Amino acid sequence: MYLHAQGKLTIYSDYTDASVTALTPLIAFAVYGGAKFFEMQDKSALVAAMAVLVFAAGLIFVHTFRHNGVSIYFPMALITKLTIISLYYVLMAILLFPSGTTRRKGERVASFEARERREARERAALVAAATGSFIALSGWMCRRGEFTSFKRYLTFR
Picture 1 (spheres, rainbow, N blue to C red):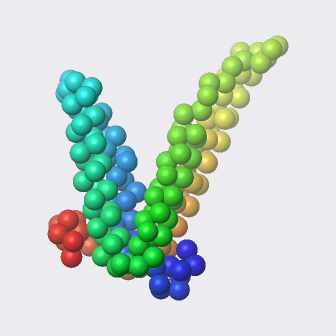
Picture 2 (cartoon, one colour; picture 1 turned 180 degrees about the vertical axis):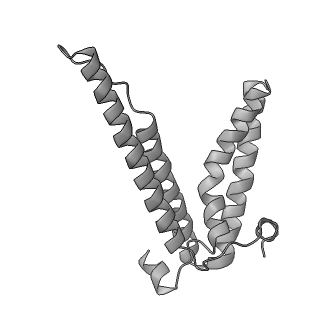
């Protein structure tokens, strides 16, 4: 991040690059879910999701290369992107899919339900804070503070 702030390294070129990078795993998961909804076989749905994932990863790879060139900064930017996105999705998985809480010994049903509601509100607040922080960090890491058209992004301009 220090090299990015110094202008030597470009992590995200603009908001479109940041959005595509952040949404790639979610889009692949949505394609898998959509394929399963339309009753495709497991292997076919997985192939469709992997094809979307590979295509989007290729876009990310090419754009990172275009903005950093043949230098040590290219792999550094790519690793930084993947690390930030991976940490965000792991954190969301931990917050959104907690292990089930059970009633404690001697705890009344009303107390248990109140504790469950309180913990759900706390998790929702943590999800909102983590997402807001991730968006702010991604926005700060964009070289240009604007969206480019998706068509332009796909043609590598």
